[in-house]
Structure formats: structure tokens, C-alpha cells
Image 1 (cartoon, chains in turn green, purple):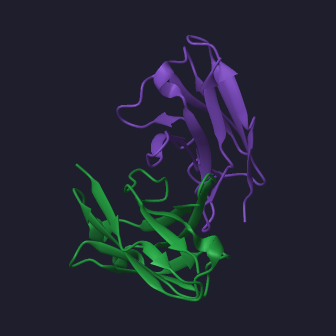
Image 2: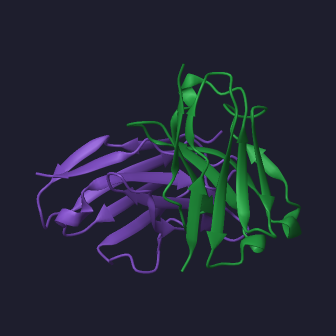
Length: 117
Length: 113
């Protein structure tokens, strides 16, 4: 069974940083492209970015609102996906999900990030 | 970026009746080399993550009831829920994965009339 477990969320001040993790199991993580998606309170879904598998180059792509502030990485030895978030803004407050593949087959339960002074 | 526009924003349907949700993309998401539409549909219930219902615009994910169906091609797509059940109350999203930057529709809330 595919499992994705996000962690690392919490309360952070504007301008601060946070690193989220997503531990994967139940599938071959190293062969899988992975995404981060967020959902602000009461709002819709927003794709943040993705990282390809290393066999496909391991490259990353980002949505415009987070490009240059957020960095996605992966550690295939630990089956873990990361999201490093810098220069956080109040509008980054959201539940952050990791998802598998381009069609979004599997989602974690999410981790809440609150940016507030 | 490809803009995904869903309609309506919300709809109320009687139990056992049909619900129809539309999704329009600002450019085609049909990849001509494989004739596949890079379009997914998700269901999200309160307090839960989204669940994949449909991919390639019309392929039902394993375990999804057959009352859910997807159709359309190019820029216009439809999610149909036949014989609406109480457990289908949720917000539904379309998503394109044709372009490098994935985008979602704004969501459609389905309620019971």
C-alpha cells in the first residue's frame, strides 16, 4: 500500500524558513516523479513544483509564486522528499501535500504551515 | 501557464440524479503523439486530501465506482456522477499535467438538494 507521510509543518514568522519532509513507502520511490501541492485555508489546490526521478535527470520545476524561494529535493536512500521554504510570507499559510506522479495518483495527509507574526 | 476553468462553482443535485461538472483549459491538453488528454479529476471531502478519480481524462482509477465517468478532449472536459450518492458530497477538481507547470481548476462543490 502506498503511503506518504508529511511532517515539518508549524508556526513560523514572516521571512522565516521551514523544511518539510515526505516519507514514502509502498512503491519504488526512486523511480517516481514527486510533487508538492498546497491548499490555503478554504481555498483550492495549488501545485508548487516537482522533482523528476534521477534516471530522468532529477530536475526540478516550480510554480511562479514560489520559484526562487522554495527548493524541492529528494533522498532516494531514505525514500524522502523535501521542500525547503525560505522567505516565507503570510500567504504561504496552507496545508502542504506531497503527491506522486504527474497525474497525482497518491497524496499524503498533509502538514499545516502557518506563517504569522 | 495553462488556466483551468471549472463550472459551475457549486451545484445541488437530488440523490439518485446526475451531476455534471465542466472543466475548460486555456489551451489543448491533448498530446498528439499518443492521443492522450493529460487531464485528471479529483474528489476532496472535508478534512481529507484529494483522491484521484479519473486520469487521461476518462480512465477511472482502480476502486472508483463506475458512476463516476470522465469525457472530453482537447480543451473541454466533463466529470459526470450518475445516480448521486450521499457519500459523493465533496469538492471536485480538474488538473492538467500536459505542461511542465501543472495547474488545477478552482473546484466545484457538490451538495445534496
